[in-house]
Length: 381
Image 1: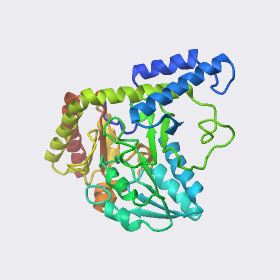
Image 2 (image 1 turned 30 degrees about the vertical axis):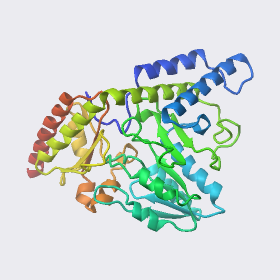
Image 3 (image 1 turned 90 degrees about the vertical axis):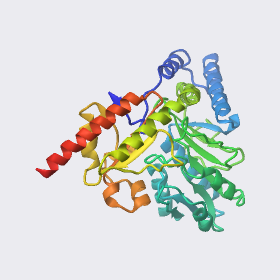
Image 4 (image 1 turned 45 degrees about the horizontal axis):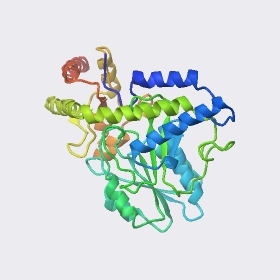
């Protein structure tokens, strides 16, 4: 098996699974309980929060544990919108955001909020000037993802953050889900107020995530019924999930130190070889792109057909983001970049991990060429 769909989800590290199992079995207490078993669980939860904060170079009280990227994005955007709606109801996002941002804003629009959706250039990047032009007196939030989940394009987060420092009342939210452990992001330096992270994108477990909320930012809780997570996210804490998330985060940062060079080599090989194949268009930009995502199109070949053709050879890739792939929808990101429906409906995403090898990439290219040849012969007959 060659697994090139790591942007959809990653295989958990053995050490992460071991930590989850140990905490679940030996430290199963409720952190809110007064007795000793509860106190042990609370201590582990506190340690996990401290470890995450240290790794992200933020304060411990700015870390909130969630169930993942979708909840984190919903809590960040709705929590900010509801808390600051008396000052304004205008929110700015980009046209290439994840569905959990787009659809959250669509829901807010039905509730009377005004949403401005910014275009992207041919490289799939938001222009800082378009952010500046969109700002108005009623603007309360700007939400732009760090690394696009489909093409790997890195957004100008530091530049947008610098711009927003001149608008101190506007909150800045960044979806950091795809960038963690692959592309550096200095949360404090970029002036980020809210930052979303999902554990299963860096070899943690599904159903676990992190939301950074800058100290002093007023937020409206979406869940009520308890005082957990400093009254912002009620519900019994997932201690084992938090501990395993901290473990996975520490491990992916270590992997990046030692294995980034290899990842870049594999990615570079894939893009170079894809450009040699007749009829293939590489959508991932040549510069300012994440090292683990390679996106391409084959106009005239339906993406789901090619995905299944490669699967028959034990190769696993995807079409659009995992949240949209089963709907057989076109890639909104590639369409926003190119305006070409033929590219957007034939999109393939290869997404790598630090475990993937150059030999695997060579096999993928070989099987891709063979699959395209077979499909074109079928289409002719």
